[in-house]
Image 1 (cartoon, rainbow, N blue to C red):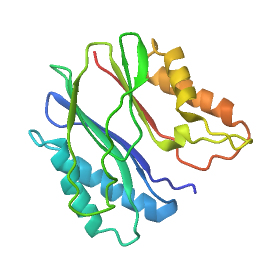
Image 2: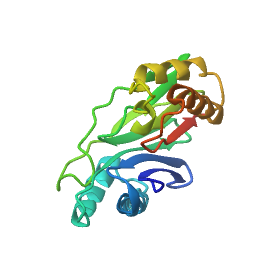
Image 3: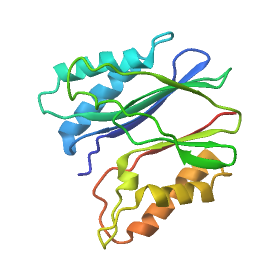
Image 4: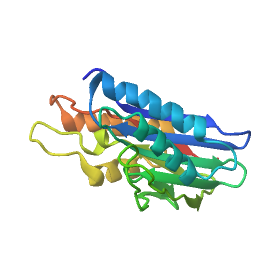
Length: 205
């Protein structure tokens, strides 16, 4: 249980495009961690200038299916931000809804999730696009956040996450993440953590 299957990444695709990735491998332990490394590497290698994110996930999915002897799958979200125009392209493979901060508040951004990666060959993934304005933020996370469980077997949930995000929406990205982590710890108390908790927050300047 000390070895996780969550991963996040951020990297420059070229001199004006920043990619962010958030993903969660099914299962626990070393097999999940090894599959995570394969998934992380494939996504980064296939994210190239001028290539649609739908194509990236479609290609990565087929490669993962071919090397998936353990029958695992990956939920994943990737976004690519044009640092000049604020255009944010994204693709979602069965992952949690990101929260988008704009016009003074965070809201879960409703996007249609595609099928998980490594679940079935020849899945077609579609790219979506939105435009960020200066000061807008994206908060992405894995289900270890919303499914954190306290001693009464209650889940942390989307509603509480929404509340803490909006209570700290004016703060810097790293401070927002610290605030969410602190609130999760307060909610969970002495109950043991059963899933990886991973978060990423991006602000467009």
